[in-house]
Length: 307
Image (tube, rainbow, N blue to C red; front, top):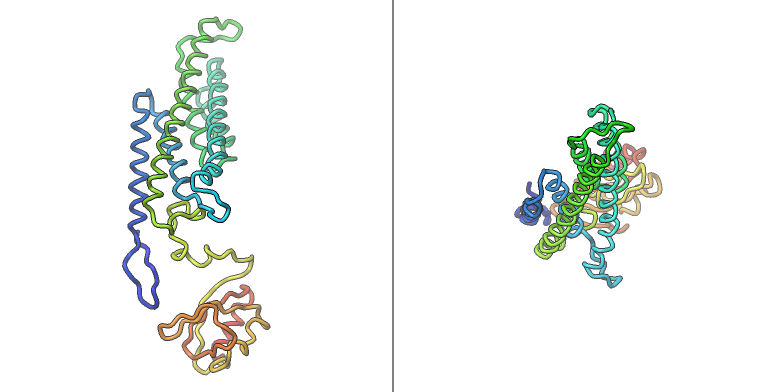
């Protein structure tokens, strides 16, 4: 993937080093998160640690620093991370609770496939309120479901013995604690990795809207940078030879009065004119960047062409 920076009419060298840095740092974060919980049994802890690490990494790399309100990067990151951390922990807790409930239900006769379907669906749905945490709840729920179902003692309704319930409770508690420890380990790894990566990246890649992997602001498509009202579009239109607007001042074009259109820029023989004034004289071959209501687009085209 290579991004290019426009400099006049020519393109300069690819701007892809920051993207490579992010990809490599993210891969390293995944590896470190996995290694940090390698001593814990099962893949559940590994997945939860990786998801937690990536969440913190993405936030710290992309969080916007607001210098004008006197908030440093750590303070701003903390404000952004706090709801995500709470949301992730709650998503995991809800997933574990759902998995425990249906695990016990399976012990009492509910078909396992139905318990797994209900656990996955409900745990995922409960976590959707905090984007990015859905899979943490899902994995945690399914993991504790399987661990409870694997308890060898049969717990028959009305005849459940104390030993069986204690083993089941111990299994559920151990799974919950292990999963939460993995999540905290992932948070720590992702936070450290994200801070280090942020120090390396150029400023253009530190944007709350870019999510760290989008292009810097000056390289993003116009429609993504500008929040357009409904029904408004931007397009390029050439001034055709013989057009009624050729050799006319922009103020005389009446594009704004007649069509609610605004000329945002003009490209002319390798020259770029941004936000041209009304005294700019239009010439044949000019390429205008026009902001216009979609229903008036064709009318503007006709006025600029020799129709």
